[in-house]
Amino acid sequence: GERQYQYLLSVIDNPTHFLSTVQVGITFLNIVAGASLADTLAAQLAPLFGDTSFAQTLSKIIILVILTFFTIVFGELFPKRIAQALKEKAALKMVRPLMAIGVVLKPFIWLLTITINGLARIFPIKFDSSDDDMTRDEIEYLVHTDETALDDSEREMITGVFSLDELVAREIMVPRTDAFMIDINDDPRENIEKMLSESYSRVPVYDDDKDNILGIIHTKRILARGFADGFDNIDFREMMQEPLFVPETVFVY
Image (cartoon, rainbow, N blue to C red; front, side, top):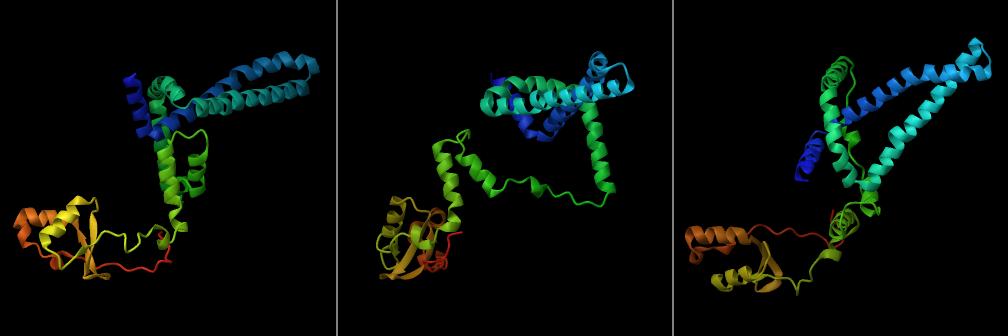
């Protein structure tokens, strides 16, 4: 229920402890499997190759190879495939057992963390976390894969962001004749009413001709000044900002 989601959020907020718990658990199981099963199974396999020291050594090697194979398949690769397929369901079912294991292993994980941090201070190595950042190709793959948790609108938004470096200003510009602007020579109250009737946060201001752009004015600043000093005292020229003119062939990003 809701509590499981709270547990899951706590794990997401502290991924280092979660990953350490998983890694320590896998390593611990590997050691236990190798120590408890290798000698026992090797002793049973050795008679097939003869009762010699070479037969015992060969049996141990074969058992270790088999155990390693099953550990990799059933301990790492197959569980990861299941988690990728089930995603949320698997996370909700496993979060509480993993948290319980994390509590048991917490002293050992704390010791590992202290040791690793100490080694990092001793050796003159620069640990750059930027290598862990996802690349553009990785993000695009996650966006377009069928297994992504993103909906169509989120996919479209992210795809649009990535296409910015391929767009030129001409492709997103509004034609001058269709653009909403106000004339500095019109009545200030009429201009304010026009601005409030639209949903733009910034409005170009021109002088008689739309080709003669004087500046850009913020609707929020107009409202703030109007409520503070009165709308009859608003000076558009004083509140305008310098316009930015760019060629239509410049890239958007």
